[in-house]
Length: 226
Image (cartoon, rainbow, N blue to C red; front, side, top):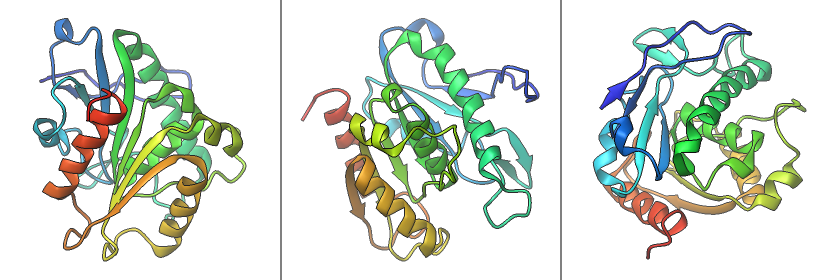
């Protein structure tokens, strides 16, 4: 695995995030790319253990969120925090989208996998540029209300793209609020080609059964393999 140094984020500074790659640069050309987006107060190492459960054809890159705090990093403030705003969501996700734009040319496609707050980042990337992504996997997470932000494309445009979306969660997960789950369910049902699976005894985590389903989903939607 390889990584890149992180540079400070400013409005006029290109973001060079800390990342982990599953392959050296010389082996990435012409492969499908899967981008891992970790949850709140985690880091880029958190999801890399999933790589061995995913189709081997993919190059996997795990990206560290930009905001340091506590034991890890976050993508944007939580909605219950005083400094939260959809503009901060858009700023963070926009910098990530720009970085992905710089690396995507080496790959046959780009797909996203986000856990918890990382799923909010993945859905926001999808809503910003749906044509850029082959599919999205969201695990135990949510989508962010757009609040008329110009960063997000109109829902009609996103819905027209019919991007395949896998959403896995446990109904007993108490981390994501019922209000956010209701919004996410409504938005995904209307605007994505949704595969939704509920799991038992998983709570706010990822299970072996869920990973098997994610592997099948990626193989079918990106690789065309049943």
